[in-house]
Length: 367
Image 1 (tube, rainbow, N blue to C red):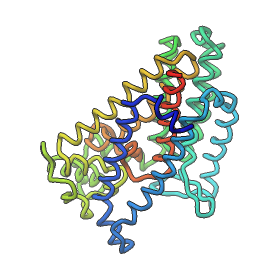
Image 2: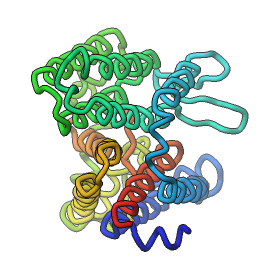
Image 3: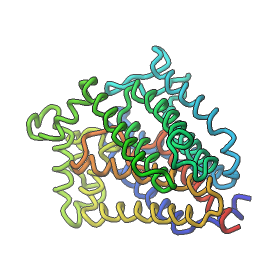
Image 4: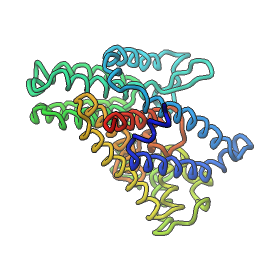
């Protein structure tokens, strides 16, 4: 069944996806070897774990391709409630894991994962189903926008409790894009955007580590050996790559100059080792994903499928844009990984599942 399904899916989307995953494996082999040997006496420690996550992600993607996407509708609200409760559980001592000033991980025995990845999927399902059910009444605030806005803001409020400003901003961006593509009232969308900005400002002002990131963004040279160390080292790595790069495996930043070089700042090493041409290739591949994802949505004959494809595509692409913007210094430092390329885990598996659902929609379009 899967083999037959693979013949019907959108090939350019799949090719761009495979290319990004391949670049990710190559760069993790390059970036993580030094840290793996230093900490675990195994240069391939992180590579092995990434390949395990990649294998799980392939299974999740296969499921997304063959499972009929219409069936997700009946799980929209209950799925969102369950995942929001799981997100709240990250605040419970002994179950939630705290790192970098936020509690975003759940630890259930040997399994550790980020519930926000499930939230992302079900919030797209909920908004897509709501847009389909409301039809043209989406233009009226009380009948259309208010119920959607109430549920979305409640979920975002749960994310802000962790606090997870990065994924809160990402989620609001995706929802606003989905509503913009629908026939929602533009003034209501502007008001919703203003509300989202206000919430982000309040979160920044009430959490010192978030405020520190923002102040560092506006003046990165104020504390080069402290708060600004990450972004300065990132800029040095990118500048060192030039046009052609130093060569794959030849990074200097990975020798403990650039923290998280195999995770959040892996794009810095992509540009250092591969230069402008490889950095640009990554951007082009995400542009292809965006274009083909939107084309898949346009060709879908069901409203739910259209907005499901748009929402999931926006999550994949906007997450990558936020990460790359952070690495080159046009956005504040965040904990958003580079889609398909950063060291795997919950984000890699969920991103591959999202891709599988998008490809599943393209398959049913052709069928």
